[in-house]
Length: 119
Image (cartoon, rainbow, N blue to C red; front, top):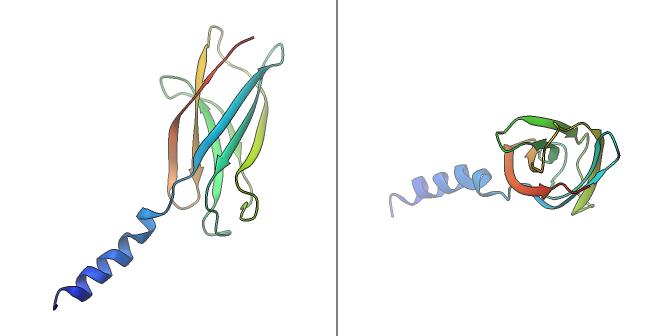
């Protein structure tokens, strides 16, 4: 019983780590001739200005950033939500990219959402 307060304090300290990370639930790319347009749907339990999904990136298989979309405000009542990035120039021969998403509290979390590029 004497360890109960220590255990309780440890659980409280760990609670932010247990918060759901932002995740990409859908992403599509459309060729626009010279570039690509991306529509990315994100899900994250935004709570307000202190904790919200605040951006996503398009990266190649080696982790090089090819495009970044900053999200300037929380989407507390709009979940999931879709935002776009237009006219992204990709290196010739790129056949697939990955989307990773970031939240204001936990940083970059998801880089496993693969988008196959077809013209």
